[in-house]
Amino acid sequence: MGAPPSYGALLLLPLLLPLLAAGATETSPEQPALPSSSGGGNGTATATGVNSNSVLVALLDSHYTELAELVEKALLLQALEDAVGRGNVTIFAPRNEALERDLDPEFRRFLLEPRNLRSLQQLLLFHVLPARIHASDAAASSLPSSHPTLSGEHVELARGDGSMRVGTAAVTRPDAVVRPDGVIHGIERLLVPRSVQEDFNRRRSLAAISAVLPTGAPEVDPRTHRLKKPAPPVPPGAPPVLPIWDAMAPGPSIAPAPAPGPGSGKHHFDGHSQVKDFIQTLLLYGGYNELADILVNLTSLATEMGRLVSEGYVLTVLAPNDEAMTRLTTDQLSEPGSPENILYYHMIPEYQTEESMYNAVRRFGKVRYDTLRLPHKVTAREADGSVKFGHGEGSAYLFDPDIYTDGRISVQGIDAVLFPPQDTATGGSDSSGSSPSAPARKAPAVTAHSKSKLRRGKLLEGACQVMGFLGASCQ
Image 1 (cartoon, rainbow, N blue to C red):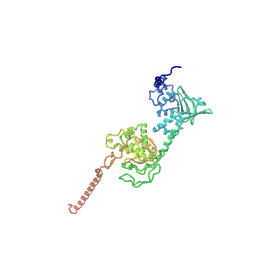
Image 2: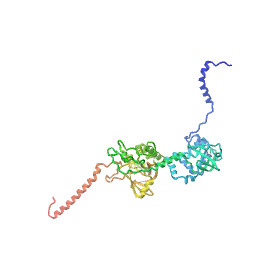
Image 3: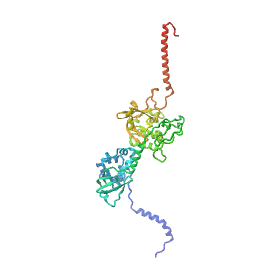
């Protein structure tokens, strides 16, 4: 038997254990770090995982051109490069006909809208598996039937009766493209994950909401901008009883109780999120940065619009593009409140789409829409197969239809900035939106008075001539 450990060694043992553990950690082999999925172009995935013989290059050069075009539109090339850099992938590629002719036009329009970029990315990543699976592997009993995709959802993979299926689609061309870092299988139709289908159903049901105009004009107190008599409860989906111009006026109790609507448990619209969504859509769409900058930075109109939509009102925004906004002069923007007045004239307190406005002008020839710049109206007419707003040289065409439509806010792109028609009584345009001054209102009356005096003078002169023939004097 050896000598028993000394008392001092026992005291040093707890201090030595952390040092021994640290030494073992330093001598263990270092684990390789995985590249980040949001890395830049100089990441390890791009440098080592993608080359000319990559499965991604084969996808872009293959006959699945529609899928490759959607991948580029969805800005997914970098994410797929990172996935290939981490290991092999399996891509289920729908044939071009499935994306061109067999896809529901409404669903295709939903996927290509800039505001639904996230849904398009989820749908495309649902077709990519972070593993290499050949057609022969699908029949193996050891292979699980459910496989995770890059979108985070699982897809079912099965083989039977001599055919291979993924989800609800049949694999028509198994192992169509085989590369060292992945394989591509051709499938008959597009795979739609549950999350994208639910998002599409929500958008479609919200877009089906139609604005119902009130049946009568309510009595509004001009001092408080509130209803003189309590209004009866409005049905779900109907706008508030208080007119939108009184709801915009400052003061206590700006509007009655919010109109019921879909969404949260409080049963009201989230107007601020919808306004933020449509401004983000303008930025993603491109060509409307000036308008978005004015809404967010130069004015409080975005907050005002969000409050109105939350209270149940609907709006149609005629959005001038950047080229039209750059034509504004310093004089047009120098007066206080000019940006607000210009944009208020481009906001219609109705929910209109390109189809509804075009049908209206085709049927009635000319339609005058109210604007938030009361009492000015904007005139619309049919021209060159489109809708034309305004008069003469200050007119604008609707050339970017339905940039954003969610059932409450509609954004229609136009190619010029609109201004109210000139006030002929004052001899100038009311660019500030204020009422004419007092001297300007009295000018027509003074002119009429002088004309009447001139007319009485000629009558008196004629009477004197007649009296002169009779020998009488006209003193």
